[in-house]
Length: 176
Ligand SMILES: CC(C)(COP(=O)(O)OP(=O)(O)OC[C@H]1O[C@@H](n2cnc3c(N)ncnc32)[C@H](O)[C@@H]1OP(=O)(O)O)[C@@H](O)C(=O)NCCC(=O)NCCS
Image 1 (cartoon, rainbow, N blue to C red):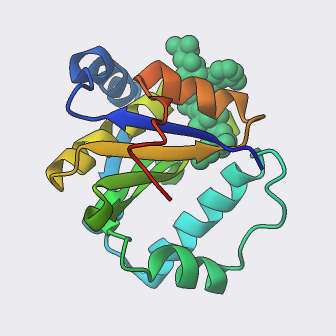
Image 2: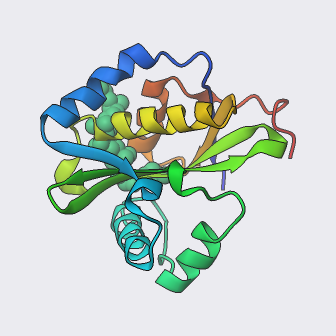
């Protein structure tokens, strides 16, 4: 797979350009929180898995999603996971959007694992608001780069990240 590999210099990120999206979503009644604030409980892990599974159905060639047990083992109970890095958008009682960021301090970056918004809530700037929170989280952990990989046919996700200022990765910065 020829992944589209993108990077964002979070020190150069222009927060003022994107804060209005967060405010507009809040005015429209969306609440923003994190898994850490809500509590990293069994019930909330299941809710996160269900939201991630629904949103992932729209990732090209995603294939079958993890079972809850696999998700917890591979995506949550790992050293790079931090519940403060799970930004959530809530509408009423329902979780409608997520942006998860893992931490890789020894390699000098945070990684944007999954950004997803339910189809019912797309096209309103929710992903931009969630990614703004992901950038703030990255800064709060004293990391300066946010990276992400996308399937080349995931047009909306690639456009969303480029809109935020992500650019094609410099391969020399991230030797494998
Ligand atoms: C990608 C996704 C998160 C975008 O969420 P969203 O809340 O609808 O996006 P926003 O309304 O915040 O739009 C932000 C920008 O993304 C881009 N974008 C969003 N949807 C798009 C689409 N269907 N086609 C092209 N560009 C799109 C645009 O640049 C848009 O900014 P603009 O409208 O000002 O030009 C959402 O479509 C989704 O959940 N997709 C499935 C899951 C996925 O593929 N996640 C990424 C893999 S980790």
